[in-house]
Image (cartoon, rainbow, N blue to C red; front, side, top):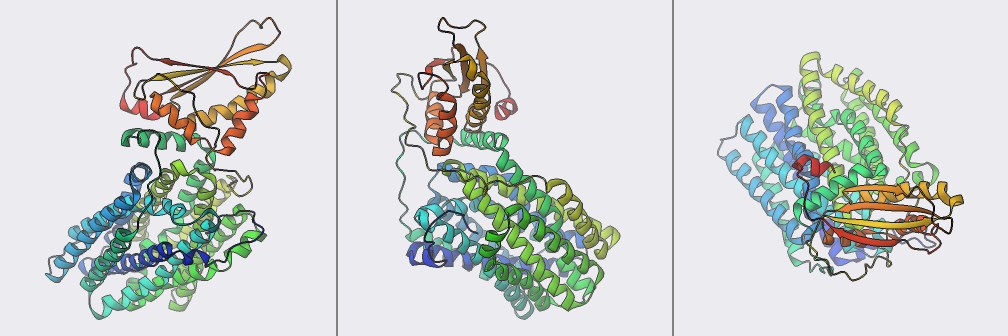
Amino acid sequence: MDVLEPEKIRPSAFSPLKSRIFLAIWIAAMTSNVGSLIQSVGEKWQMTQLTPSTLLVALIETGTTLPILVLGLAAGAIADIVDRRRWLIATQLFMLIVAGVLTLLTFLGQITPAILLGMAVLIGIGSALSMPAFQAIVPELLPRQELSGGVALNSAGYNISRAIGPALGGLIVGWLGAGWAFLLNAVSFLAVVVVLWKWKRPIPPQDLPSERFAGAMTIGFRYVRHSRPLQIILIRTVGYIWFSGVIFSLLPALVIYRLRLGSAAFGLLTGCIGAGAVFITFFMPMLRTRFSANQLLGGFTVLAVIAQSIIALEPHTLAVALCLFFAGMSWLATFSTINTAIHVSVPSWVKARAFGAYQMAWGGAIAFASAFWGAVAERFGLPAGFALSALGMLIVLLFIGRLRITAFEEEQDLTPSKDNAHSDTPIPLNAGPVLIQMEFRIPEAQKAPFLEAMQHVRRLRLRDGAMRWALFEEPSQANDGHLKFMEVYLSSSMGEHLRQHHRSTNADREIFARAFRLDPSGRPKARHLIAVGEEETSFLQRLWQ
């Protein structure tokens, strides 16, 4: 994935590897990805040996990804408020223990479909809790000018794993059995733990108390609710995954019941997906210079439609392998574009929560879609599952293709603003709710531009954590002919209000300045009022607000 930045001299694609800690974590993460994909092959193949049900085989994918839907935003909130290094070590140790128990039960011959699904869910929980933190630490490992290359290398490393892991998993399962696949995955988690243990992560200074978990969750929810660009990214994600995810849920049944091949062939065919992803990685920088993000998403979605249609109609192994290669190209191109859009459009203070929301959309779509397409295939047959998914993807593209991702077209400076200081206040940080009043005096001729500018201010206030917002106008004019307006918004506490100041980026400050400049004084007068009694509201009401 590339973060598009206008630079006169672009660093080498491999220059981030000069950082020893980035290189070590990159290799360890790639090793862990290979182990996870080997285990995935082992789980799916083991399930086919335990039951002939295509639904239960598809539910392995559901069990692994459903926790991402449930825990994505919570994991992002944790990653934004705790030491990410320690959190990642804890999650890797948890998955190591789960993989170890699964290995032991397999060698003892105690595996049942229920146990296998349960272990898949536990591994999915560990993965869901670690993914936002892994996404968010990249800027901590590299200087800003190397960030683009680091994100691209992470994507390439993951897809190299996708090419190697399934093929290796198929061979290991075929030669040694599923237990050895699970054992190798446990060892791969240990590699990540060792590297993270040696990383001396600098702790950023904190002028304010850390956010509480519930508050961080609520702020993450509000950010998603009031960030239209992020909402479009999430909608495009769900629309693509629901139909393209059929490849991962039905491929095991396709290999066994239609192509009539063994575990080694299953691993090699799954590796074709990774090979296609690695292949297109080298061409993505060139494609991004020639086509817009939305053109790339549309074109590669059509490629996935063609691939799935051919799989539905052509039972020949070579044709299926070629289609899986194209499906891998589509998968990488789509999600490298989406991931990069999040990196360039979301500020650092909420980045892990944004990726958590994205992973909820991704994990939820693939979890429910896996079960859905498994049921379709069991009722109508495998060809119908692939054919209907291809048709559905094309129809959905016609509807959601109009939702444009603008992150690459509207470049924003997401650097934290230096002009975010708040005047000294005697109000305790835990006091609240706090009502903030901003008094404006606007020339009558500037009323329309002011009202338009304040709608952008409203979006920023609510997106960054305000519970409510309103703009009031005094009916009578001031003696000097100016109109009086009062902006009013509510923060949960004084500490949260100060955090909102610290969250402002240079791009946000320009939006505020556009409204403030219309006041001849250049800055409205501010007042802060503390509530003397709190309105009784339910948890869901507070969350929605």
